[in-house]
Image (cartoon, rainbow, N blue to C red; front, side, top):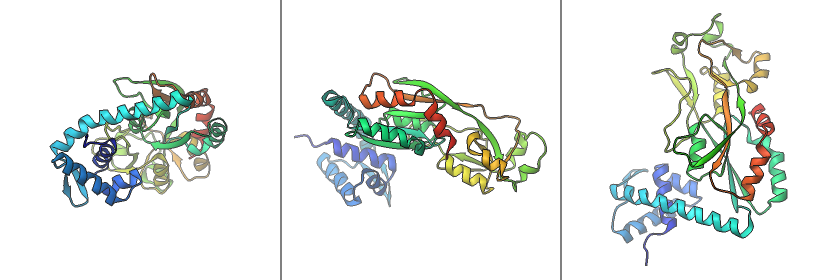
Length: 303
């Protein structure tokens, strides 16, 4: 009888990614004692230690790393098989996940979601917010089925199809009380280096994190998403580029000052992306619904 189950592999994978039993329990919607028991039972059955404990933080042992290196292939294969079986049975995915870049507002999809449920009331819909390379990683790691508004070119290696559906323009803004607001010329790198930048932290877990517009060694306040970055900049905690559509009213009412910079940020091309070769009724429905750019334009107008 096999001593290794897919559920145990999933538990080990989640702990390794999250760094603690408690964080893994939160992601898997389980109590921490269940996570601890699963790991202890697996270690006993295999006769090896999978994690080194450092208080609440844990790290994989060499044996645990080897188990997970091969085990992740099994998890992906099992997920593939489940999806294929369900699609063959009904044509509609049992669950469908959209990963949306935080530059775009999921709330702008309310009417689209209602229309989707009219035709696919048996498909569970999930929405994720990701940042920078994290959107692409969500697709490649099968945490998402369709990327909406993924920015920048995707990672090398293929395995996905990407389709441009719009673009996002950015402006450099500071709060009116910020020291840079009073400089009456284009801001240079030297001007910017003396002050704090506000950036968005890349949500990628495995892919190389992407940074945008930061100077080497610069004091940086890292925000979890674009919405938080917006509020930090409005509070005068630092400077940076924000979507132009977000700050029109703020600039008109004096809450932000637009500054010219010597190195402006180019427009970002936004993409729909999905795994090549995968088809399902939900994927087809959302691809058609989001093509043409109208939905992306709505999502770009609100925070």
